[in-house]
Image (cartoon, rainbow, N blue to C red; front, side):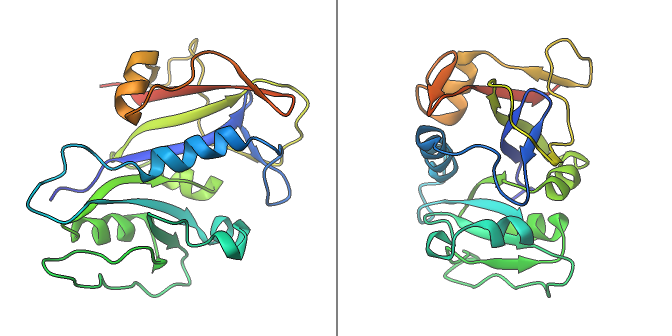
Length: 213
């Protein structure tokens, strides 16, 4: 198979803040977290019927992996790939014809190595980059990065010390285009709540951005 496309999935403030002191700046967004879980688990409907059930991958840096409470990692139902320059590269666990074993974690030295790993897997589904900032930045430099699933936090007042390395603004001309609600629904495979949502006093909106061209 060809190298998979990369989809970056992130929640960020209007000025693209994504973290504070190694954790999320906001709390209590259970519906938003459930959306993340559903979307990253849902496999493409066009998966080959001749293979076993496809499995999506979530690719993250070591700090993001460490920030997940131990009882919740690896993230269930997805192949967890952890990128760190200090890691030796894992080899795919062969099951039949090049299928990888979930849920991992698989440890690799670079994002490129993660893509090479997924290329060898006959049961690979979608590939999501879930953080942190350095991994997002590395992904955005690759042609494989095709889209960003953004939860735009619209409430003000969240202090951040970590930022998503791309400004997503409908007024900018940086090569990324905001897609329609219908296109978001089709890509995620569900009817995504429309417009501004509010949870625990925090307002946010689900968006889909794609690289132009």
